[in-house]
Image (cartoon, rainbow, N blue to C red):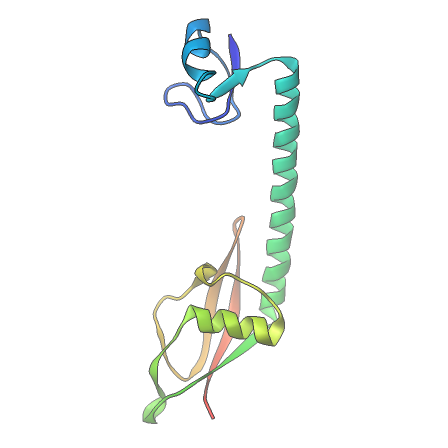
Length: 149
């Protein structure tokens, strides 16, 4: 019997695979547990439509990530922080502060877990902060840490 897997089944296949298995395994195990459905014309058509929709959404997400990456190239974010003598901060600049400043200054919304900091920012100055935008896209934010007034 041919079935379409709705979940990953160890030793059988991954989600969306059309596999040939024994009738008993399909009727007694996979179908009752909603791990698979019979591969009839309707279900195969639904699978094709779902895969096309997923591919279209992935393409849209990739183009959006590229657009945000291009915007970030021309952006400089200024973060005001309190510090002492010698240019040291009283703490560090966090990713939450960077994201908040980016949204306020340039109206670009990025989740804070997308920012990658090699080490904490504990001095005044200019830094490059990497951003993982998803779909194999990345960008760089120019960050300028200035003294708070």
